[in-house]
Image (cartoon, rainbow, N blue to C red; front, side, top):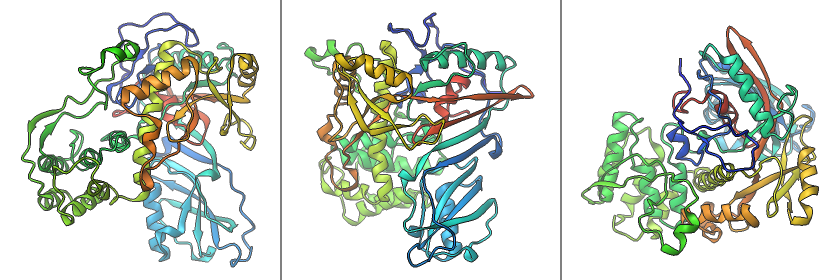
Length: 524
């Protein structure tokens, strides 16, 4: 059994919706590294493990896509729409497998949302130029043709996901602890904590999967890109070994670090400065921000030989993206001392697929968003209702019944005069408070919420204009709800709970479950 961590010695009696600053129960180091500083509920967790079997983690898409009839003309409707149930299949792996079985290119397979592998997932796919009779049989896969469409699926075709998740091997007191934590989460949602039918809510953090589970570096690469340091971005991705990786992988990454002139670097916990060179005139302004730590830095200097072909030989063949970067460095004979902003470094980073290039910057936006939420929580500002200066958005009119889904394109800046009006909208589920996924066009809030947003950006050494980048790295940004709310049903069998709930697209089931388990993400 995995027990929840009791590593916060300074808990207090504040309720989750107490508007005054309060210490948080400290999160695990791997969570703090991605901006999740603590827990909303001070109650002890239930421990346990997720995904003991794939059937313990069931995900069903809440579809926002209406296909035409299956007998529609193939000329006008070239896409076959299929509902697929996958057992222990990664979404990308299935796309490759089905395209191979159909002898079509991978680009002719589309879907609206990527799912985790160790689960049973049901979702839509579109297959361009395919007929129902062509569908293959694949082990662990059920494929049901349901219609045709004139275009392939895209991200906007997913309203959300319904989850049914069993947590195995929990503590003996799990029922009592679940009840206590659920009460705290109902209070955080702004409802009656004693009403078991009231929705629960948590901060709408980006979960660990966003940054990498075994080696969470995606956001570090992205932050380097946004700062214009493409050299460091390449090193962080291709080098920078993690203790959790296999020996041959660590050896390959160490060789890359050596070629860059770095012999060893401690596993990075964050990208923040240690504070040694903080300007006197800004130190006081930033003093209230929690210390997230920083990678301690170089242990010893490497050779800096820039022998990228030797690095390529040392890098395991399974690491295709890293090898692609190294191949470009070798082909262009890039000097390891070339300036960080030199085009050769960017060209090497562009060896990875375009979606991964975008993911680097998205992960940078995500860790900044997480930090903003953690600071707002620490200061005691509400999440279920706005304060003056906030930017709110209205609910998605097309969301399925029972899904609390925001529409970030319908924004409303909350002035002093409109606070009470927007409070009522939020209380009725018609509006949500937001924070920025920073980009060139994403406006920051005013008042204290704006102070938090600007302090986080200043601490990271980033400003919105920095997101004006070449190619796939460019991002205009948007805003995202800071709280995710859901109706929660919990049942118990043999002492272990099963959680049933639904979340809008882009919100993470593990962010809700972490409040109940309080287990290190690397162990759950």
